[in-house]
Image 1: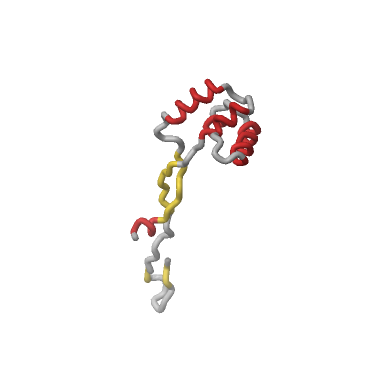
Image 2: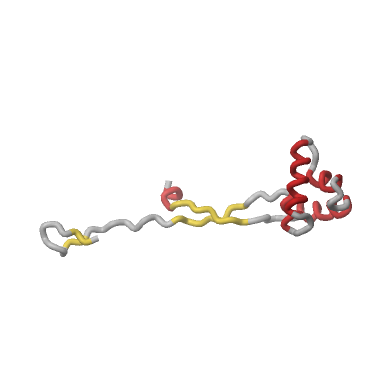
Length: 104
């Protein structure tokens, strides 16, 4: 920024640039019901209905709830559960962290 000061426009005053956020990938947890929905094996409505029953019956597993509702067969849920548990990395989103956080 130019500083007008007593010497006109000749003096330069340094100003630090605004901090730019640093983007760091972060793993996001995905649950089995979301996995089935995201693979288009169940609809959004079926997922929400299964969640409602799942939450009302403490201890009920979402896969068992989906089978009980007749959405998927037990064999298909077991097959998809095996695929789900074999995943190493599920999903990555970016998180903004300012440079000053890393300097601390």
